[in-house]
Image (tube, rainbow, N blue to C red):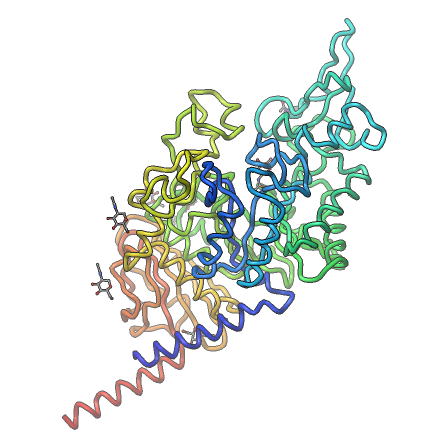
Length: 577
Ligand SMILES: *[C@@H]1O[C@H](CO)[C@@H](O)[C@H](O)[C@H]1NC(C)=O
Ligand SMILES: *[C@@H]1O[C@H](CO)[C@@H](O)[C@H](O)[C@H]1NC(C)=O
Ligand SMILES: *[C@@H]1O[C@H](CO)[C@@H](O)[C@H](O)[C@H]1NC(C)=O
Ligand SMILES: *[C@@H]1O[C@H](CO)[C@@H](O)[C@H](O)[C@H]1NC(C)=O
Ligand SMILES: *[C@@H]1O[C@H](CO)[C@@H](O)[C@H](O)[C@H]1NC(C)=O
Ligand SMILES: *[C@@H]1O[C@H](CO)[C@@H](O)[C@H](O)[C@H]1NC(C)=O
Ligand SMILES: CC(=O)N[C@H]1CO[C@H](CO)[C@@H](O)[C@@H]1O
């Protein structure tokens, strides 16, 4: 058995080596993407704000963990009204985060380590301090139509006109802001300080195209495209009963950008952030209706966040997962995420006892996984954040007694590296408080214990690279109300996954997923609190699960034969003794 294990480990290493060469253009198909919010990741100069040099200092952490793609949220020059999503210059680095040469160093060092880098592209809006806006509000002709301007509805008494319609901002209130300089309203889907670009103006597209090329030249491997569903609004400014998202022009623009990056370079990816859209809309981001034109490779799938809650049962999980996989166009690669800087942390949203089971799910479903920084150690929301410490504009715009409901700060607290001051994030005062849970829950502690969320996470990233998980089919069942089960099978090898979503003791027959599995199946990995250990032999027909237990069970025809051989040999040895 030990020999087999060593061989297995050896083969796994070979497989990783082969996969990590990243020579091929479809590197992204097996990606595990790690989202870094630079402000909260690691501070290198002790001003309390994370920065690019901080990310550089942690590159080995990603390699060690098995991450192969970094998605870095905005570090561009910004007025810092919305977590740097209010850009004042798309091709400059904000001094909060460092310099252009820091970014160049990041690209170079990441490349040496075979790490890919995706940047966050924010074409929906700029900052109201962006040069384009400053020119547009004084009607400089070149920039006159760069934003969505409207004269408003004239009043009889010649007072300030009324807003053009009842459209509302994501952050509350009207999405129209009167601009005294231009004597007109501008449209802002998000904060007042984030005027929407007019993407019907060809000059704007040309400028944005230059931005994409600029960062490809620097070394970007692709772009997450921010707030895609909201890129276009009804051209006639009509009031609608439902908020209109994903207008046809949006798909055409993504198609154009895909053509641009393909023509300009090779192997670059587009990742539209399509939040809360009907599944049919989401699928349209892959390609046009007859499949003759490609759009984005990875339209982000928010379904596990949007459609599941802490009380969802196994059938609900099955329904949500299958409604997505069955809608995918031929040849499309699935993607999954459970966390982002816009949502409560998965450990808090779904229940912290479930974090291992959910990470197992995220890493063993077919396709690409998105990982939000800190989820690998089960970081939780910091719900005790005070009004004084609140930074998120969405919370600041809310009521002082009710702001936590809207606060995205709770999920954006600094990464919990170790138990030293400020969790090892910075020796300056952190821009957002560190979650006091860091004393017990931190990466260092999780590395030093035998079993932890992090250790499991790391093993999952190794396992993901096994061809059974890359190419295998998916057979998913609710084994009972509380236990979600599925198998992944390829070329004679299979794994069964069983996840207990509840605090109950359960016994299930997991052989319904794959009849080959029997009374001598082997636990390959188990959740960190599980009473099972890797290597334990179980009977899948009668599989006992403790509360929140999650297990990956292995079957391989080779193991079976060798096991019988070993048993036979043991018997012979016994006879001779
Ligand atoms: C994948 O896992 C199976 C089952 O454990 C194993 O037999 C096979 O060697 C693994 N493949 C690789 C490439 O590691
Ligand atoms: C805007 O007006 C339309 C049409 O009158 C109505 O159906 C819709 O509910 C209104 N929206 C808001 C946010 O008030
Ligand atoms: C767990 O079981 C309890 C009692 O049957 C039930 O109320 C709850 O909704 C179940 N689901 C989860 C995910 O806790
Ligand atoms: C902090 O972490 C160190 C190193 O892991 C450990 O030795 C020490 O006991 C921890 N201190 C506290 C207060 O938990
Ligand atoms: C951790 O693992 C080591 C080596 O396998 C073992 O000696 C030790 O007893 C384990 N500790 C705990 C707390 O299980
Ligand atoms: C699972 O949850 C769904 C939605 O709440 C419900 O309709 C269904 O009856 C539940 N299934 C079981 C087996 O409890
Ligand atoms: C996932 C994502 O990119 N979310 C962003 C969408 O855009 C708004 C406005 O810029 C941001 O606040 C979100 O964080």
